[in-house]
Amino acid sequence: MSKPLEGKVAVITGSGRRAGLGEAIARRLASDGAKIVLSDLGTSRDSATGEEHIGTSDEMEGIAAELRQLGVEVSTCPCDVRSLDEVRALAAHAEAEHGGIDIWVNNAGIGYIMKPLLDVTEADWRAVIDVNLTGSFFGLKAAAEQMVKQGRGGRIINIASQAAKSGFPHAQAYSSSKHGLVGLVRSAAIELGPHKITVNNVCPNHVTTGLGAWQNEYFAKVTGAGSIEEYMDAMAKRIPMGRPGLPEDTANAVAWLCTDQAAYITAESMNVSGGEEPH
Image (cartoon, rainbow, N blue to C red; front, side, top):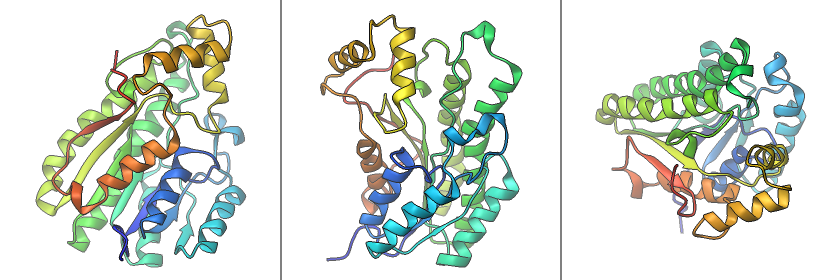
């Protein structure tokens, strides 16, 4: 039996870190038969992209090696999504190595710069907006250029957040960047629909990843919880499904949007939240 994404080429930005959303998405699309292009910064570029927050080249190559052992056709390409030239080079890499692009997932993002409003600097604001919103626009643009040229349609998916539909303390830039993705897909879907290219957002709530320990500590402090465990327990209680999201939950939603079953779904911002409502 053929797999639903057999022969498709998928580019996933921000996929070079172990235990992150990008890796989970890459593994899920690969399991459905897609050829995979992993992409991450590879090396620190500035103070906003320190080594603790990026996928290094060695880490990315390690993920690629594991996928190859499973029989997946995979390549790697470092890319700073804040540069349109680098993003276009990533698209060119996918075409040269795998014959084109069918799926593009804008997963690269900054969620670790959170401060009280009066403490946010111009550099903080620009770092978050440049990666989360401008970087997604550059990815959408580069992917669309290639997909229109190919003439066989495609899927473009942004990893947004429930912060695309609500606000929370100390996240002015983050919420603004994710809200911007809602307008981006609504406009882009109108223009790209005639080319059979769908454009959607996936909006997870709090996702428990191997990279999220600092988030749990931060939100426990902001919400006044006595401990990380108390915060996690309170969060689970407000989610109807009784638990925070897992990387696989988001990856499964992305995978479905890439299938023929979702060919008529575009301009949407789909919650993956266990029933938790934006607030």
